[in-house]
Image (cartoon, rainbow, N blue to C red):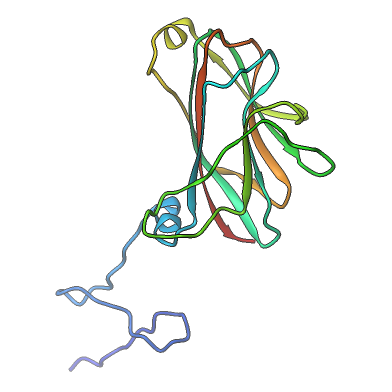
Amino acid sequence: MFAQVYINDGTGNNHAAKVNSENQLSVVTMPAIGQASLNGDAYSWNAISDNIDTTDCMILVSNTSSSRLLVIHKVFFQGDIAGQLDFKLCSATSLTLAGTAITPVNLNRSNIKTAPALAFADETASPATTIFYTHYQTLPYAAVAGIMNTIDFGDAVILGLDDCFGIDTILEPAAGFEATVFGYFIDA
């Protein structure tokens, strides 16, 4: 004779956990960015072909929330020159951020939440204070339009209130660039 065991879902709502047809616990796993997208908390910021000068910041994203952390998931970028790109972290405190404003895109199109963040292309006021990664774009990537570099940070870059993530170009692009940052918010 078998005893029946009930497992609650752990939320305090007294819901029973689900089992499959074999009476095995049903577990659904999803990447954190997928879960954030379902909740309406995942966004992208896209910057395209602005007038970038030497040492300018191609794209800068700043967290403006005191109660949420911004997790940088992945970046896609491409420029039309071979050269060095510096990925940086800095603080927006006491800075007047400038450049071309970027409107965030909620990755859940059925959700109307807006990102508690500011983002700019061709941002010139942010210092290159903490460079945590340097990427050297090679000539083949620079010479062929549409070939994108991808950096997957594995959700390791986390921004608190007024923290910024940016990509500085060391050389001046001849005609243009593109950079897209994917990230999501979690409770602090």
